[in-house]
Length: 241
Image (cartoon, rainbow, N blue to C red):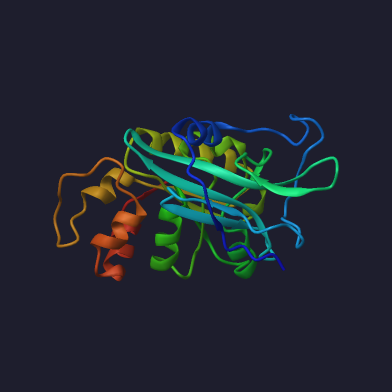
């Protein structure tokens, strides 16, 4: 079994981080290199860029590692980069800061397999997905790789027949993400509903209303709402079809 503990890696330049976050290169786009999904047991350990503030392993239904997503906080905001295992024509296996081919497996396939009857909560981003998993243990929380603009490049087929609830960030890209995912799940999921992120962000944990914060998400909700039962009730009131 592959040891997925990342190794430390030399610092990436800002240009390399930006390029890695935008790549979507198929296995045949650069000669005969082959993207390996899942990662084979004889692959070396993945690398870990020193400046990454978060790393999330994507796994298949059996729990096998597929690829990694790294988050970077930059002076002009956040960015993401994939790390995937590749095999060269000579048979050598190594890691590259390169996107997996589309359609890309979503985050949480192992949780979906473990809870085949549960409803699904779709968060926007891995950090938000992890927070939602802790807050809503009876649901399966997933997200798509690559941020709000890459939802159409994800493989949503694992949600076939599931009831889905989308929790976007409280901003314009979040609303676009929610509408895009809802459209992609039409004919796949048995039911799709969206949380009104603005209404939920306006709900004060102490009661009443407050000024909503742009970009407010599930991770913010987890840190602000001490009473998780009250949060779940507030969320129910903010669900729209």
